[in-house]
Length: 143
Image 1 (tube, rainbow, N blue to C red):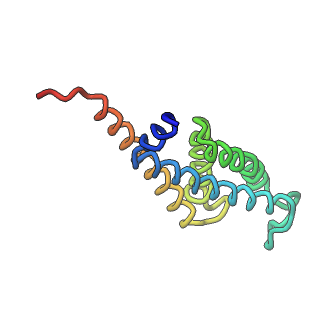
Image 2 (cartoon, one colour; image 1 turned 135 degrees about the horizontal axis):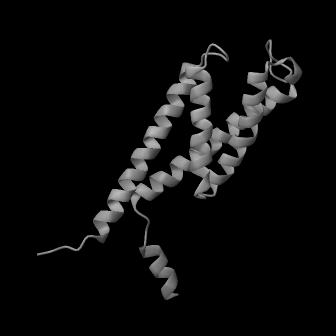
């Protein structure tokens, strides 16, 4: 009984709750993006490049890589595993590269570049704030 009351009294800091919700939302986003790439691979996608064998090699490589990477990153983010954000950032940087820098080879999607870039910046700021908060809690208070 005493342990249960202690668990109720100890609440995680707000930054950790925000981090948990953020990575869970990003996990749902990564899963949706992974499903999008799988849809393109199996040929349900409407458009010129609707089948895998009709895609140029650059699209084949990007679709296969991101179709595998994004659902795995979603799993890692949802479980809050340390490798989850690493895979998500790798996938987000790949999408930024594809839809931003190499848009002539692929296609231009500025909203994907903007979303992924802002999500990475928010993630970094959130982790920096959490690190700073933990450091503040460890500092001895001198009077």
